[in-house]
Length: 242
Image (cartoon, rainbow, N blue to C red; front, side):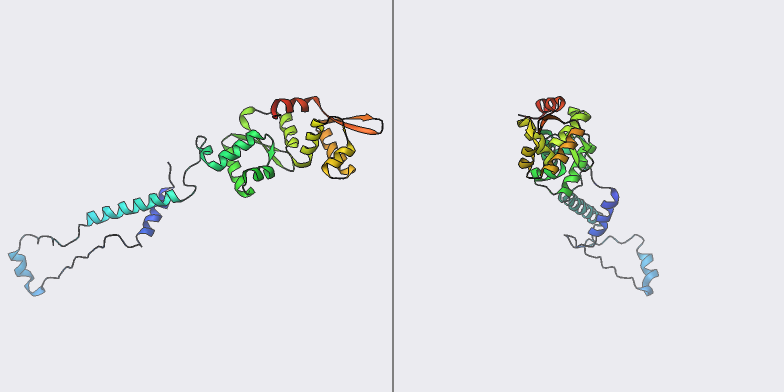
């Protein structure tokens, strides 16, 4: 376990000095010798006076003091969050990060909003944990322009797969792709009714998916029918659980 730098420890030591010690320190009372009898005393006593037995063993006091400070410092570190350095080996030991990573593995292409709902975590905290996981190369982040989508790094999703799965895992576009997958040849009106939007709005969203080569259209009389492209079908069959 790695702790914070020596500067923090020294600062904590200085703060600790302001608190009373568990064992009180008794000051030795030193009486000054009589000036008038100094020469006589120096002559009669050639050896230094023995140390007062009631005096304090200052070496023991300081040793005990440092031991108390060290124990309090270690206790404080255990109570503080973030004192342990996050590495590739321990990044997923955190329960929240482990849950986030598992959700990303189960839902490739998931976006931040949906991930926050599933892991019951606010987006600010979620961003912090995602950054930690991404920095250790457990996940990759796909920037769709308006949103970010997350993938397990070790599966090596191609750019086309990331693009399709990002749309498939997003709000309205995900509903469109899912409906077309379940009901190939669905009409524009059926799509609009399913989404609860107007036909022009449904058409605009479909055009985005057509441009990204996720969907292709087939004109049939007065109806326009919607189908997934071959690549889209392959991605769903290979990656998305039935």
